[in-house]
Image (cartoon, rainbow, N blue to C red; front, side):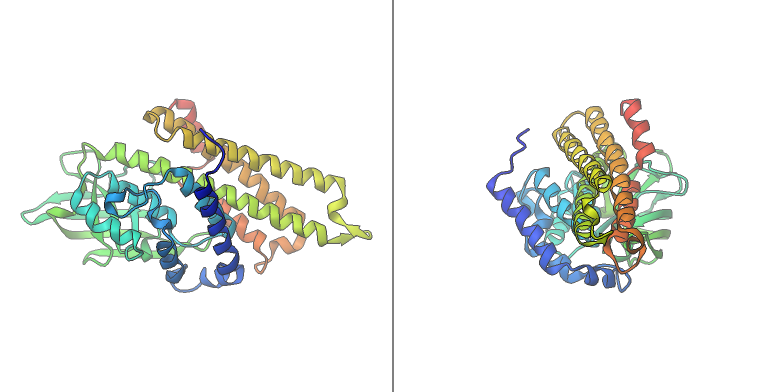
Length: 373
């Protein structure tokens, strides 16, 4: 793997960083997190216009067919800016599921609309007590009818469901324990959302399906193929969160370094105290460790499933641990101001808390790594 960025990748990184710096101010983000949908549709359309929603999708649906490296560059900057828009859930997780579904009808209908910013998707998979399992369908059943299917069940903690236009829903048939995946309109009769905000300010929902009538065409992936596709898409989304977490760590370090250079005590900036310099050095080491293991995860994305999952679990667990350390140190080095709502470092800590849990927390991935899958 070549660790040197190409000229095009450098231009992409610089462009995203400039956008976050100039157009994604903290106060604007803080206001957006507590109003409306919890993110800006205007920013989302800008992401589409700049081509960021098309990075990993193939050219036949209007994508740019880039590698995951480009995606990681975008997400690292998104982590620095604490971006609220549902990029991971819609443009990485759900787009990957649709792209690999094998359904030309759904690919040609959903993916170009997503790339153009006209469509938001969310995956409704987890159920009560499922923890971080993938392909949950114990409580969600699709009954075959003369017109198509009738869907009933409850999904929990569906990230970005309140703003999604369509949901990708995992459900089982009565005579099968393996999940199928259906495309369901969020506003369809029988779909009921219990919305709430999560710790970072993003939105999620518990979704109840009460005898939702679906046509035959709503079936996206049949049970014989779904688990492999869902596992691979979740691994990609988990690695995307690793890249985002790395950006959060760098955001905290930049903010903390600037603070300790200007905060004076005993007649000098506290950044001159050796003990604080040691802490900043430890934060830097943890962030560099996360970058290295992110690169290792990217190098294993196209490996066989067992190798890929083990490498990504290592990256997710290690980055979760490093992120906790870096963000906790950042809050502590800021002292009392680090606990205030008006200052960014506490918001970084909240976002890192959420990212550590998304797509499997530290304990989950340590167990998965130890089991070899």
